[in-house]
Every structure is written in C-alpha cells, then in structure tokens.
Length: 218
Image (cartoon, rainbow, N blue to C red; front, side):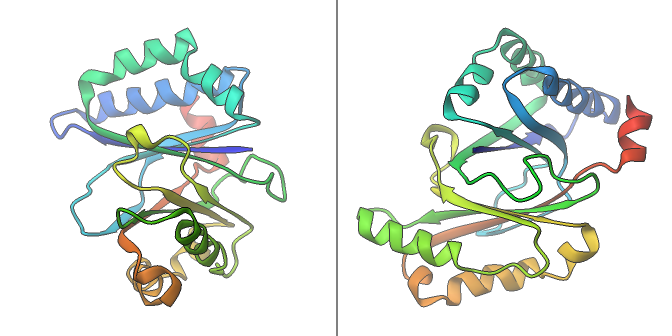
C-alpha cells in the first residue's frame, strides 16, 4: 500500500465559500478507480521545529501500488482539479511512502483522528544511518493508535527536504489529544538514535469528518 499526504496553504484572501469549494473538489476525486481512500479538510493543528510552516489543509489518500498513485496523478480529472485550485493555493508539499495494509482496512473510520509526522534529516547521511533512524522512528509507540505506518519518502521533488514520514490513526480526537504535539517533537529529539541526525520535525493533526458532516455536505 502507498500512503499519500499533501499539505496545502490556502491564500489568506480566499473566502470561506471558495475554500469549501476547493475541499469539495478534492474530495470528489474519491470516485476515481485508483483510490482506496481519500479525505481532505482543514488541519486541526500543526507543530514544527522550526515553526515556519503554516499549512492550512491536508489531503490523505491510500493506493494499492505506486502504479495506481502515478495513474491517479496523471488522470485528466486530477490534472483539471489542480489547474482549477492553483489560483487559490499559496504553498504545497507532499510525501509518499510504502506501508503494510493496516488492520481494519485502508479506510480509517469516520471521525477518527490522524497524526502525521514528517522528519527532515541532516544532509550527507549514508544509507546505513538513514535506515537506523527510520528503524528508531518506526519503533516509537503511539498509545491507543489503531493504525500506524512509517516509511521513507518516495517523492522528494515536493517534500521540502523531508525524507521520512509516519502516520498514526486514533479512534477519535480525544485519544489524539491525549498526546501532546510539543512533547512528541521533544521526544524525537531526545532519542539518541534520532536527535543527532535530525534537522527538523513537522507534526500534523487531522480529524476525518463524522458521518453527519459527510452526509450533510453531500
């Protein structure tokens, strides 16, 4: 399975109705045959070191294979959507990574909460060191998480230097908020196998729509 996460910064002068239209356009892509799952909406919270990132929205999608991801990326409907949304977007970044199919299937439950963490490593690290850091990150436990994936980024051209990603799915916002983002960033930097090679961390929280919200917006 391929995890696909896109972060977007909507321009500040874009109205709420225009922003909703952007979100609706993106969520309509779920009808494309290549997708296992897709959800886009406003970020609940973003934390980073340094704190210069100010993305407003996140898209999370899952694919069976890298071939399906590429087919989705080149699909005319997807390309038309990118063109339609481009005037309203100030900044964008994306990471993709290989993951095992998670327990419970590829579609997270409605109203579940996601914590996505991106890692930027220092320049010049060899493969052995990068794999060691990836192993240390993969070994960090998330209490109450029902799904957890972690991997090296496959798409460096839009990743702003971030090369490792993890994604944890929690039953809901309450379980997610039991974790503290700032403390988590600190924990990564305290880990001896990680901190000496780490340049920056970005922690992103996103809550999937509840069934009521999904049905009322359709």
